[in-house]
Each structure stands twice: as C-alpha cells, then as structure tokens.
Amino acid sequence: MSDTPSFDPHMLEALICPRTQSTLEYDAEAQELVSRKAGLAFPIRNGIPIMLVGEARALDD
Image 1 (cartoon, one colour):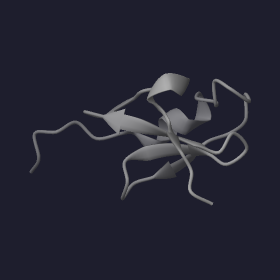
Image 2 (cartoon, rainbow, N blue to C red):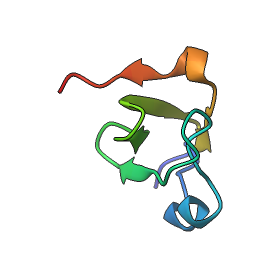
Image 3 (cartoon, helix red, strand yellow):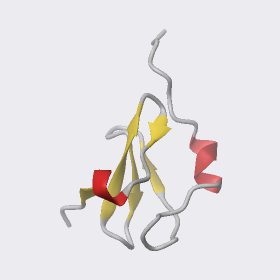
Image 4 (cartoon, rainbow, N blue to C red):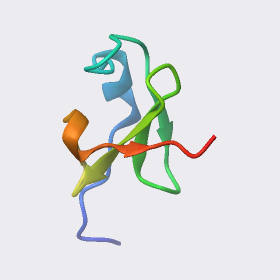
C-alpha cells in the first residue's frame, strides 16, 4: 500500500482546462491531466492536479 495520495478520476467531472474550458483526459501512467485542445498536460502532484498554465507541459504531437 502506497502512502502517496492518488488522483480520483471522478474529479474529471468538475475540472476543465483553464485555457480553453474544454474537457480533460486523465493519463494515469504520466500522472497528468491532458487538454488536447490546448496542447497542454497539467501535472498531478501528491494526488492534487496543478491547474496552472505556467506549470503545464506542452504536448509533443
């Protein structure tokens, strides 16, 4: 059992991309919330999504 809090995927129902107000996808392996429309991936740290554009990673597509 891990001591690290995990992200609850049900939070996706309430979260939207701060740049585009579009829906997000949960990438469990990378621990990120992905906004395809904005081309950004927002990190999840200690189970908490960091929904700041300045903290997001640009997608490589």
